[in-house]
Length: 158
Length: 158
Image (cartoon, one colour):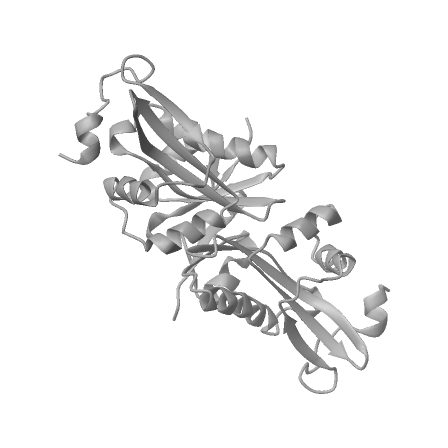
């Protein structure tokens, strides 16, 4: 049983808003990077050098962390960030919700917070690259795939 | 006839490397924004507030301008920029080559310069959103459309 599981058992079939604490969001960049790594591990992402993760966070336009607080314990359960030119375009990266907290509308709240940050900075072109299994999730949030035939492309070295 | 046309007639059917001057690249952000606007006009892009363009350039990870110099005249004939988290991901925006200078391999050189800048900063995930008419152009440069089913998505307000 992981450290978190000891203190925060699975929230499945429980009501987040009542007896098991509260969910909060933060745009603070001072994130416990080891806690973030544990969150990314939980969804099966490849490990990345902590120093590079810190650099990426420092140079993102905005960062939104989602916490579950119960009694005196505060756990990082979601994370998202966006790069931007601060004027026209933004791209979301590293959108993650802990498996125990998925399918409860929290991913939508998390992405909505990022969009709110971007829109409040008058950034109109909000983009992302979606893996096949999350395309429907983003569609429900108002994202459109390949609008007007615009295609996402990735460069690969020869 | 535009100001530039007076001094730089169409380079079609001429050899850029010989009698009509030289092409150079610069990563300097001190770009004549009115000249950039004229370049974007030439390819039919919508006008954007100059102040916002300056902000976007200032907050891009890298900017590459392409100039044609002949005699004492230096003309902005291409431009590209990329946003990035300085660590993992980058996205190219505003890639433009003046119509008189297209189909000569200069667009490839321009994008290659941007990629070189990104790779020298150890940024491995180089992305872009391509309009339908330039997908083949980027494919020839090593970009892959929708790799592993990853889809480009754009958010639209309700």
